[in-house]
Image 1 (tube, rainbow, N blue to C red):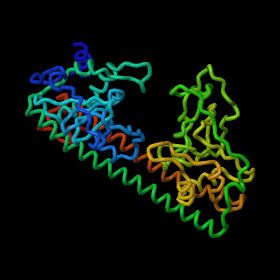
Image 2: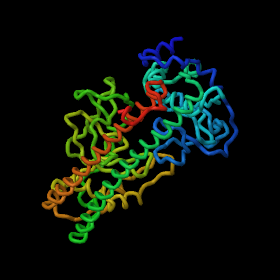
Image 3: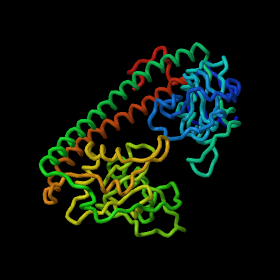
Length: 422
């Protein structure tokens, strides 16, 4: 079996002699139960498995108005997004509900422990195998045919060993997840501390200097151009069109772009220069609309997209100062009150609403000092946040390594100690 050989190549040490390989089709049976429109909508995540769609705020895919063709899922069923299985988007569900018709649902037989299968199929060797078996022109369009998926070899220890592995991984991954959640909470607290400092500084500036509408200091407002582009990183000498994610975090990211095909001539009217004040015009999330950042192109040839605005200020006004104000609670409260669009769709802010935003009337001669002190504080907190993010990346890598080692028999979970897994 070709897939078995591919798996052996990923596991050069092999598996314990008492374990066996069986094809997946002996353990699962594809289901196609529909017409359950009242059931809860579920989603499949690479990092979280099967979860209720309502439990996440980062899924902007709009459900169909007619849910009768959505596939029914029971607790214990295997669910995979065949367009993203190569990324690890498959899992055994703990929930009852329905998923998109683009997903595949399988019943798991009594011949395997469901939680063990859940961990095994999401382990790194199997994700590598899905990547090898998926077909398509571009990675974001790869599709894993079910006929190929059902043939993959499943590493099958004795059933009691499967239970021990699943119980061990339930406990150990929960411990890692709690630690990662604590780290994320630290990050949230850092962000809240920064917003408190910024809000106080802006409030003091408004009391001391008053405020004025942005149109009073704006000499131009334009949105960009969105030609058909390739989802690839451009070389420094190639033209590219910015994504909204280049701005939506509040820190400019020159690498968040799409490559402009060589057959398409760049419209240089929309060339982005260092120091340009950019705002997101539209997004699937209201929290990301109207986010501001100052461009630092790193010498790249970047173009403004249709979902971004460029705000041109009077010569003596600071782009960094205005961006800081618009990212503050003072600015965000004004922006969110003007956003238009229905939930689940792209929401946008109009140019005239941007011009009506009010900002502190700090004299231009004092804006640099005001901005510098706050940006230094923001930079220090950003560095701390980066350390937390790096720590969580290491935790995620450790979690995956632990799962792989357990489900492939690299250690005996009945005798494994934390020191042995380092």
